[in-house]
Length: 311
Image (cartoon, rainbow, N blue to C red; front, side, top):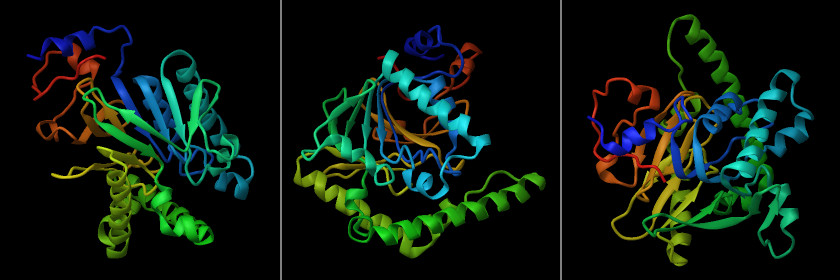
């Protein structure tokens, strides 16, 4: 039998597969580009509730808008729906923070020379922000391109690399079209390359080291970023934790970091209906399955190490 707190959550009137998060971090939506999973992004924002929502950079892909002009008509409304949902959340439900990335760096002009935080339409716009968890842990939140040597020193190479990334997704679409016809499940070429190519893993490793060094030097308990499209929770016996919220440009990812009521942070994947728990800052909950409200309203057959409580 599930603990009482699960039942309390199930009785909430929102219905569907809704979860409530004390805080949530999503990044690299790349709205405006063909690779943005706009439908999945919208369903995540629609079916869940947030006390605080962090949009951690590259939410809008201005690089793509400059190259392609307007979005294709068939995709435009899906992307607009996401923007409208974010504005509605900021107005009626959540405290929304937008930290600027490299693909939406044009927004830095609104911060002025001092890069001070500004508010636009109930959304707090900044370069970085500090989040304090329910357990008192201090996390630095920023997109992460600040730790990417190529992006900082040779932006033209970064843009060239982005073209290569687009080509990878073009191949990925063709491969998965064939796989669907053969009755095979979705397969991510981008994820395969990152996990198998030695140079890619070295770049990711250097990025993590730079981010952790900065967090350590400034006295943070952890750092939360995006940018490299590689979702992760990495804890250390001594020193700050490294968390990366991944991206929403590949059905094989669609990740978010979410804070539970007890202050622990989980890395999840969204499949359109429910969250899939991948990793947690709470070792006892690593790999534990979190059921949806629909499943809770049925006869429960599973148990969990630690219940999700409302906040």
